[in-house]
Every structure is written in structure tokens, then in C-alpha cells.
Amino acid sequence: MDSLSERRKALLFLVMAAALWSTSGVLIKMTDWQPIAILSARSLFASLVFLIYMRRLPVRFNRWQLLAAGASILTQFLFITSTRLTTAANAIFLQYTAPIYVVLLGYWFLRERPSRTDYVSMLIIFTGLFFFFGDKLSTGGFYGNLLAILSGVTSAVMMVSFRAQKDGAPEESFLIASLATAIMGFPFVLKEAWTVNTWLIIAFLGIFQIGLAFVFFTKAIKHIPALEANLVSTLEPVLNPLWVFLFLGESMGLFALIGGLIVLGGVVLSAMGSAKTAKEND
Image 1 (spheres, rainbow, N blue to C red):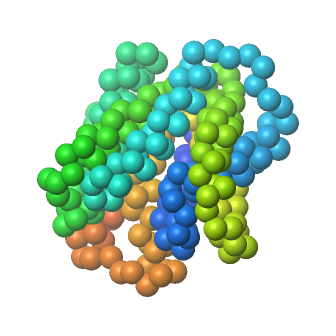
Image 2 (cartoon, helix red, strand yellow):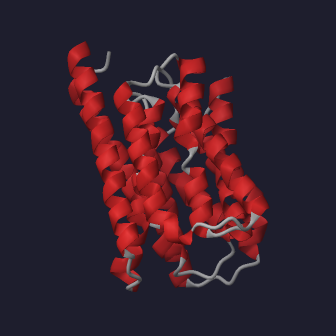
């Protein structure tokens, strides 16, 4: 079993990854590029980060590696598309139903059985997300909602596929996904207006918000079960409006604040339960 110190370090890496992922909202609001162009350009920078980090290109491929890469691309594409067809709140909330699917996939393929604390944490986090997005959720945008649900499924597949490579090199999956996304979407980048300010934003998104964040994630997923990793990542949508508030002045409502605190409580409970389990197994 992983030592308690390794699990604590991995948990810290996951929190740092979620914090970096959450900066996308405020930065994307600062550019008028189309989502696909942003996705492609930031993937280009993210690929450079991973090439420097790994100092090699993948030469051998396996099903989990390719499945993780494919699921990563699909998750990003489905989420971007769903936000165009339904509300942003619906898209995020429905995507973060992923832990439900992680429970099933993690048990079937990885034999990682969730604990009672995991189930309680998941219920608390879902409650918090409902409070957080409650006043913005709607029943409209049927196809967008459907795509958002599918993005939750592909997100779960991605999480489990990365976790299945805990004894391998999960970072290779991310590099494959980034290179493929950068190449496929580059024609859209060529159609956008290029300014220094825009490219600085894109560079930050690629290097830090995606690149460095996934370095932390791929290091952490080797020591943290897929479900717990997914639950900790729910900090991302909670932190996202915090940056928007700090840099753009858009304030959160009372229910959003309450929901954020509930989600934080669920994440802390999940981490404490994991630490207790690790200590008992050491």
C-alpha cells in the first residue's frame, strides 16, 4: 500500500491541480477567441510542458493509455459543446455527476471498493453543488444537458483510465491527448485575431492551467483512488467564481457561498477518510 506521507503529498497535488484548473473561467472571459481555438492553442503550450517534463515521446501504446487520451479529448469537446447548448451551470453540474460512474467503473475494472465515508462525502458534495448552482440550473437546453451528462461519463472513464496506469506512465496519455487536440483544432486558431495579450492568456492557460495542473494530477493519481481523485477535483467549479470575483468583481450569491462551503466540507471528509484508511493499512 502507499505510505501515508505519499498519499498526503498526492492529495496536495490534487488540490493544486484543481486550483489551477479553476483559473480557466476568469482567463477565458478575458479573451474573445472561440472555445475550440482556445482549446487547441492551450493544448499546444501544454504539450510543450509535458515534453519538457517527460523528455521523451511515447513509443509503446496500450489500451488504458489510449483510452485515457481519447476520454480526455472527448470530455473537453463535449463540455465546450454543451456550454453552447445549455447554461454554464447545467454543463458544470451535470459533468460533475462523474463520481457516480467512477464508483461503478472503478469497482468493475480496478477493484477499488468505495468506503462508507466515500459515499457520505459524495452525497455531501452533490448537495453542495446543488446549492452552488441551484439558482442557475434550468430544465432547458435538452441536447446541451445530454452532452453534459455524457461529458460526466467520459470524465469518469478518463479518471479510471489514468488510475489504471498507476504502475505505468499516465502522463503519456495526457501528452497524446494534447498533441492530438492541438493539431486538430489549429485551423481554428489561424482564423482568430492574434494579439500579444491574447497569446499571454493562452500561454498561461496551456502552461499552468492545463500543463502544470496535469503534471500534478498524473503524479497524484498513482497514489489516490479514482473516486477520491474525482471528489477532490470538485473544488474546481467552486474555486472558479472565486477568481472571477477577485479579478473581475463578479460576486457570488449567498446560496453559492453556502454550497461552496458544503463542497469543501465533503472534500475534507473524503481526505480524512482516506488518510484514516491509509494509516490503518500502513
